[in-house]
Image (cartoon, rainbow over the protein chains, first blue to last red):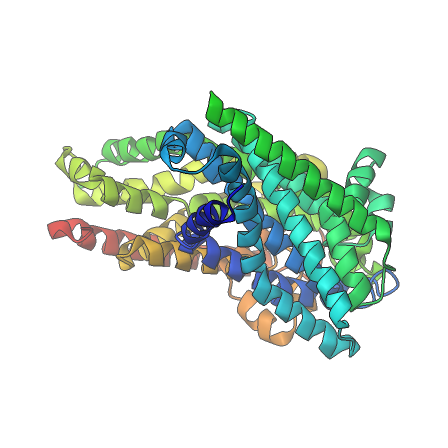
Length: 258
Length: 261
């Protein structure tokens, strides 16, 4: 597999991402408004016995939601390319199918990481300001590696969904359900104990093994000290990333062979 | 002389166009369900007991009513995108060639933009009322009438923005930013009493605050924290009058002499 070819595909997708100015602007304002307005107000309403400071609790979660939303977007483009036969043009390029497939998965994740970076810096600043804790280089590396795994898995999941149907309506419905279930059924907005006491068991299970929960909790482990770091979180994310990256690559290759 | 029939024809066309946005309709419906069935339920258990008392005993009901208004706003605002798309695809030239006066066309767009949003949100509004319960049908009717005006006002607001900005990129970005701020700086998600003063000052004059609080009042949520119903009605009427008028004037002005190009 030629790294240069994969890099070309990634570069194309990253350039494409910044064409969606309206989406990026809307997302940035939404993310910042969530943190600096919504979380600030909820901090005054949340029971401190459950969450001591909601603003600080939510900040690491915000990084994950931003990463997830940006990485998830690649699926929409892939689905559009399949429906409009743009994939034929992609096949005409002097790039192997595997390179194309992995390039797309990697591009989706790198887009997520690029979009998330300023929000990660904001989170680091906020948690440092409130807790005076700054992660060690190893902890920081683990956080970034965790986010990379979440991004790879999300990008793969999104591409797999996009390739599972050629009907745009079916795709949008599936995408919406998966997106919102993963989004709200996670520890991004609230701790696991609350989810356990509020939602039925199947949703609790989703929340527990949800990569967004693992990503948010792993970041909180290093930035806030709770919940404690567990190796299983990394393993969970590793399996999620590997599984969906492979599924997406195989599905993409299959779609190109049709 | 404005022909109501012509106005209705334009409004009906906008309503039919809306049904083509399957993606938007599906995503918004899923978003609504996820917001109330997941986020609303969990957050309801996260709040202090005094907050629950202050919002009328159940934050979940308070939140569900707010989410309905957010949905109403986000679908009514969509008419602005239609206007941009039509300018891009040359549909405005066609619309100007039909035997309908400029005023009828513009008024019809504003009414159609609001009405289609109200129709789309109605089943979800009824579901919300089923969850909250109805205690006073008369109050509810007043609330519905106010929300009807609110959707026309939002459509007018979106049309005003769409015709004031020539670049579709700038319009998209501005609408994205406004959308993020207008919802969070209102009482759709939380009561004004818990907002810091600098946010509360803005939220007090936000049309979404008036709409959310009048809907809560209509549904019988008893809370001292919601805006007084008559203030809310007055706020909505002012919002509706201002933006429907502005939208019509500006839109009419812009379509003369190819101002949209």
